Image (tube, rainbow over all chains, first blue to last red; front, side):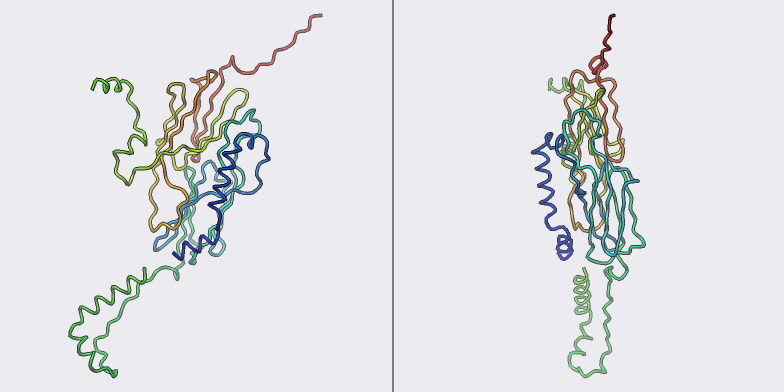
Length: 184
Length: 138
């Protein structure tokens, strides 16, 4: 929940914007392609984001990009991807459909927890850009061992102590279960 | 049952759509129409079709009933961990394009690179625009 909210904050209306772009492109179709100058604004490639205990994995949908023209950078907790891909060449005599987003693209993702910027791996294959960002050591979920002292008799709680010793299995099992749940 | 024997004559290649019904839910993917740009030069029509995640083994391009048919089923593994954002999904692709009479069916070339399929459909030589030299008789 928290993650989703924070990420949404980065691009609040982008889905709507994409929808609108898409509709406009379809509606204007050929006319738009033939007459309007190419949009100067960079388009935003769609991505998926998966989060595991150790890393974030991001996959950008970017078919038809020359890997040389693909730039991936990390600054703090923000991942930036930008580049350019060619569209219909200028010497085309006639354009029938122009459905692809072409030209300059850019997208930034802000991560809710720190990432280990030294060990980020990016791989571009078959039109998909995979970026793996390990979570910073301090941001990884840690398991905290619950210490259960049996001989706490030195403090001034005489009555409950005797009972806990007797039935130690039940309460201790419950206690460790609840801590695990809250970690997740 | 006689119908079946007729169909056997032209066995249909296994497509994503056809497989979808019988394969387990984990591998079943919807089939979508891939985005494409189509343009024309003097001597050829060109298609650029987006097939992200598709390798050479996953794609089939064929001509059937005056249509160029592109089918692809990419093998994309599911990343580990919980989904935080899902703006695209791995799908199978299918799209067909009607070929006109001037398309030279035997000279069609298809090339897959970085998840983009480029198809070159040359025009028949006799249909290409020609410049006729004007002879001046003196």
